[in-house]
Each structure stands twice: as structure tokens, then as C-alpha cells.
Amino acid sequence: MRLSKLLNIVFPDMCPLCSERQPEDGKPICSTCFSDLSIIHGRTCTKCGGPLLTEHARCRECTDSPRVWWQSAVSAFCFDGLSREAVHRFKYHGDVSLIPFLSDACISAWNERCPDKTVDCIVPVPLHWLRKLRRGYNQSEMICTEISQALSAPMIRAVKRVRWTPPQAQLSKSKRQNNLKNAFLVSNQERIRGKSLLLVDDVMTTGSTLNECSRQLVKAGAAEVNILTIARRL
Image (cartoon, one colour):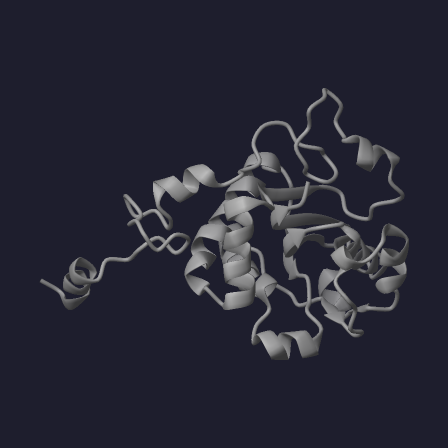
């Protein structure tokens, strides 16, 4: 018997979310935790990717909101309960064991809802250098690496965060746009010009950060920008 198999018998891999049960059939998390996740199913808004309760193509918020610079948005989960726990473990505690599960969920959601969308490049939402230094990594880049391989599209760090900003969720609606003014700069402009980009982040909260990054990318010559996130607030 190989050593790896022996170790797995003596010290079996436990579910990274509950640490109590073993995942079944090679799945990354146990069936109990999986059933508790708030997966976004059914009809979604063609613009923001949120669940739709009406027959309209867009939700009321997207219909009434000012200009949005991306074409479509997809999220795998609602940001609540165990979904929030999974994102926080990965984002703030460096639990890399969740990367395969979270990235696979993103890829499945994208392929299900946007099967005909062209993706030329994958672009991670950047962290300010100070925040990345403190955390040690950019969680969006780590997810992007997996998505890039699955979609056979290169990951390009096309956006830089050149100014530190407080989290958008802590600000009033009127202050969010000013908070992001001059916060992002497009680099590698020649590599994204005329391309269809997939902008990836961990959570869509207010959408302001994703919209500002999309605006800068479109102004720099991108043909279109689409959004993919692990989860979104409702």
C-alpha cells in the first residue's frame, strides 16, 4: 500500500468547512455542508446576476440604476451562512483547500449561464499593495488561476489599485463612487484592447468596485467586460 493511501486511512481528509465529516466520492466538501450552501439557481438578472422573481430580464435595481459598464454578471452563491463562511476562510484565513471547490463553483455557474460568451482574458480585481502585503496574497488572483486553466484563457493583471480606499460596504451610497475616484489604473493596455474580458472577484457587494474596474477597462479599449464572482450580497 502506498504511503499516501495509508496516511489517508489513518488521517482522513475532513471537510474544510465543518472539519467533522469526510467528503464523499472525491467531492471537496461533505454532503451536509453542500446542502447548506445558498447556490444561485434558476432565472437571474441578465445584468447583475441576482436571482429574479419576475419574468423581466433585469431586476428593478439594474433597471433603475445609472450606467453599468459590464455586460453581464454571474455569481455562484448568495453571500450568506455557509457561503460567507467559505469565502471568509479562504479570503482572510488563507484556507487554500477551498480553492478547487470555490473555483469549480464559479466555472460551473459561468458555463451554465453564459455558455455562448467569448472569454479572451481573465482579469482579477486588484488589491492595494499594502492590503496585499498584510494578507500575503490576492484571493481573486488565486481563483483566477483555476478559472484561466478551465476556460483556456490567459490571466492578465490588467488593473492596478493605485490608491488605498476603505471598503465600499462601510460607506453610504452617495460616498461609494467618490471613494473609488482615481483608485484604479489600467496596465497591459495593449493586451486587453479589443478583447472580451472576464473580471473576477470574490464577492459582489455594492458592485461599485467592479463597475469602476469595468469602466477603466472599457475606456482602455476592451471590447466588453463580464463579471464572475464567488458570491454576491442580495
